[in-house]
Image (cartoon, rainbow, N blue to C red):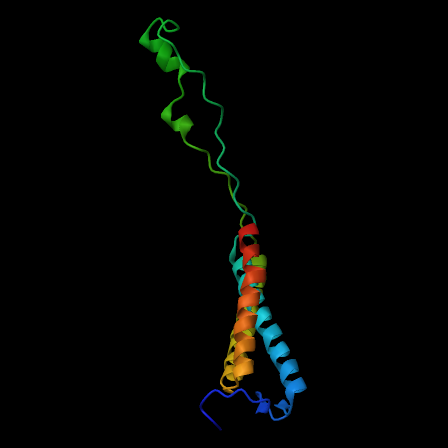
Length: 160
């Protein structure tokens, strides 16, 4: 086995039954590897999405709006100013309680995350072994699949 990159159309990928003998088989193999890499990038986005809390906390709410500013003619004494102004404790935003998932849901979520992690690691090693075939076209398929997957799926992270 050659340890340098070559651009031929004959390569064995992963298993003996995935033996490529011609240009049509190479195009199909590059397409399959490209799709596997796009799916790998999708798994990375799904894993981040599952890591987010089930419900995002809402914006902090103030108990009441600020009163209009007081003019010196409106106040007869300092006690009137203190009585009509908001105290420091009422200026602090109130925190809304975020519902925590039940223990059963947490275990289910953790199980799904574990399965996705196993799938992501396995797919990553499969793609690494494809690159280690030292075929230039397969290598370019993995690189282009990664670029395409990142371009398609990572904008979805801003919508999560």
